[in-house]
Length: 411
Image (tube, rainbow, N blue to C red; front, side):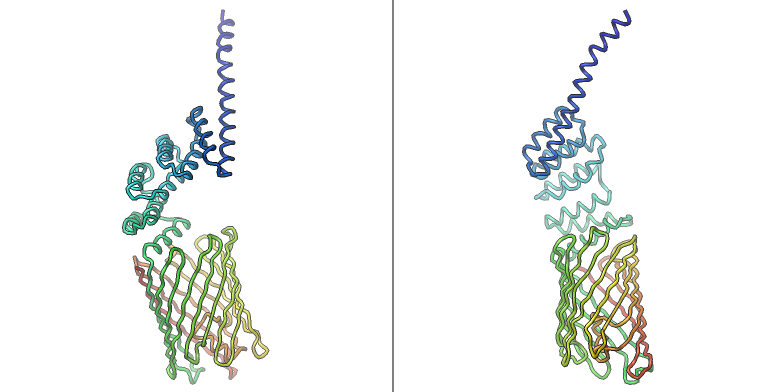
């Protein structure tokens, strides 16, 4: 009797087991086929397959995630919202990136607010939710709401990617920045004819999307003479991996270049290292300088490490060279950091001092500069001090002390 009952149970359950297994195989097949169609951007047939697969296996999370991607690509936001809520209600946190991405797809503020309120109970107060919400409102040109959203990030610890997003948001919200810088260069007694130099710079920077353009005026008072340098900089961004630096400047002072131009191109290699290649061109009354520049930048934890070399041209049989090491230690945000610069030679980017190289290509200089950059709400301050030691034409060693203070206001 027992044997016959066992045989009866097995005869009933075994076909059901085979049916479930076949269904599982069928669903996997549908998923793989839909995934390939999605990769090939054949969204409509892919969506038909995911719909069929979900009817068979509604708990199959990967299929529903794929369906959400397809619905978002085809702008079927009501459908994708339902699938997102299904997963969130079932504690499927794998859908969080897609739930956040959904906020960036709405074209009306009312729709965005409705969706935000719907998912806030699941994701509210998370850092990525706040950042994405601000990005979404910025996409719809609502800077006021985007700015107020970021207030929720006070006293939260952000990782490097989140910090980058936050700084990018601040630039898009407050697209203007004015900076005032003062630099004092004091000379040792080995410079008998030199008085202290006073350098004042006024900058106006504006962001156009991710592109930054700066207009700058530099005034240099050297005691016996003075002059102005006018400059415009731009940082065109081509992609996540490529961007560049372009600068043009002019002056009528005899210790500044009559005309100057700079170009650097930067390329990021798989977020491992960033390389730079470019040149600086300076044209004075009686001579000109074309200097190639190469560099490399690496982020290690909270450290930014950059090495640069300016090599050339050859003047009076001497190859002009400048090598520098730049480091930053980031504090809580990318806008707050300590910095250090070590170098030999004088860079063509050092507007105030480069005329010393123009007059004496054989000049050997070593320098150190350290400081801090700090933002408090919309106001930034930079403080630094430095020391330079160089060979003088009379065979002596000259020493220079540099103090710098900068104030910035972002609006």
